Length: 181
Length: 181
Image 1: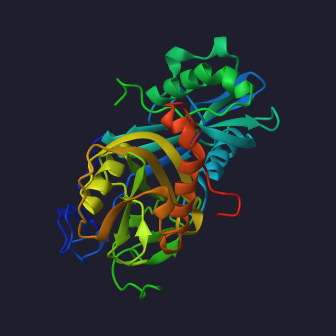
Image 2: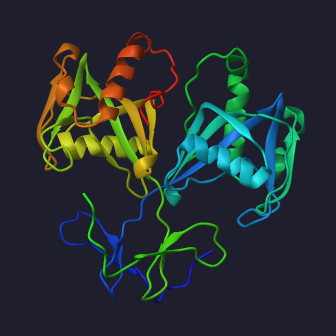
């Protein structure tokens, strides 16, 4: 997974004048790449009692099942980003609801905002980043073939809140499990 | 507020091969700057019934009052970032609690994660980005001298949840007010 040493663009780690920490700078032109944590937006998306999952057609974790999720883009809200990812990866149209979980993965400087959502129809179709998409009943979720720990976490947090959710009650979003960092 | 046209670094807007949207590319070396939404982390931080605010010593909105908040850095959690900002801007040590609000500002591609926090002591001191810091009773908050709309929003969302908060009950975080985008 290690990248080759770049030979162009920002590639020198240094503390720029007036700054208090190291940044990646281009030694050819002086451009400073302010690298910031990235936001992943996704959803536990329901059709009736079933949950939308996507089998990944891309690395990492190709062939494993994940929630529809991906990097938030410029100029969109986090809710719109979660809906866009479900459309791109699973051809699913979502009504995005409350925040189900906020996960921090500081090792890779990632914040995941996982919403609870409902499909507005059961029509789904694998997009280019998915081998297959499906609506799983709870007892059929492929627990041993999930792509990432946070997929497992978010599904279980949905289960914990299911009665509140179906009663339309407000709930606090989950954070990382204690042993999850 | 418009920036001068850059003469170095990524400065040409184009769709790179294999991509589906425009990115900023350096025409000299081909480096692609993947510009992502940025995360602001901050807090409504309480000492007893009083709320920590900081009078800004920097642009924009110099001289106006704000919550301790700033850009999340690489390698930290959002909670740790909120605590770091309160330390840097106000010399305040925080115990960071539940998420109070998630605000989307898509015009500037910003997501704000505002936590509820408690100061672990009343000792505060203005950092380099603050002209002044203070603990305000609710009735003394300088409403007409707040720096940003989301400061006003977050304070009012705290007020709405105050009984739940003081009772230790869970609550859903706020999102943008309907007219707030």
